[in-house]
Image (cartoon, rainbow, N blue to C red; front, side, top):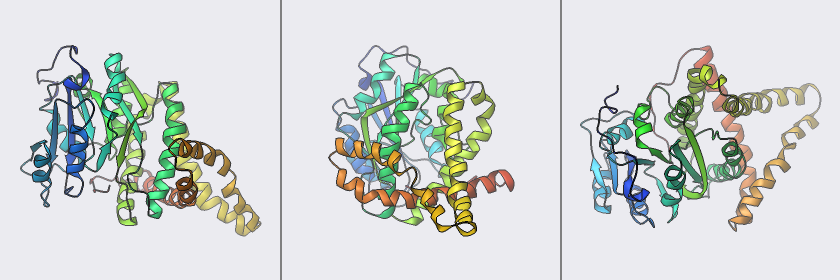
Length: 357
């Protein structure tokens, strides 16, 4: 039994879900955004019972701003070293049936909280639920690339995964959990650099369900320059490789999850090899016309993104941002291949959590 499991827990929920929810916001040097996040949570159509901000030894007044905005603030004696560590610190104080984790640079649509809690309240087998993610700012090349990437993921891939009962990740920036199941899983693990993926796959292997709720929308601040983007992609890429190595035996015992992870591996690895190595070599060896292969899947990718953009009244933004998605795609590939090389070939895993929005 873990320390978290030893804590007293509530019985099955009897009250309205929002009255039985604690929101955890891990924060390190988030003075520019944490107050907006807290106010967004407290201003929901169904506010939570508690909002706990973990001020992880910030140096910029994050804790004071969070407290002034209406949150409870926890501050450890020393930095926990990762988002997972900060969230677990707050989890020890959770006594509600449901817990939610939101990044300190993320705001919510006014009804996002109650919509995200609905599948948890309706089905006791659901351990986690995640929402739709849309970048709050869309101006730089990297923000525009991420905007298209998210529209594609959350309007095409994620709904398909949810239909078959296996969303690949319950996104770390905005997810709700059944506290009892979260605690039984050990909270957010620090053994990989992608704690949200690790937790999601752990839930599946424990026989629990995870749901995607497209109507519950959140707005994180995405990397606006390459410095932040590089840190984020390095963590995500290494975390993906680490989780595949950690969970592959359990994944193979679940055909649907194995299929979803297999597609993700093919897209992350094989597509990166083709885009960054195979096509350029063939273009030099055979003909420059080979480079037209980069455009083969443009219609398949553009259509769902345009549909999503039309629903949001943002067709112009989609068309302007779509070329940036190709730039981001190539950068994603570079980071994924670098992570594979270091994790698998050199056996030098990424052990330090480096902050990047």
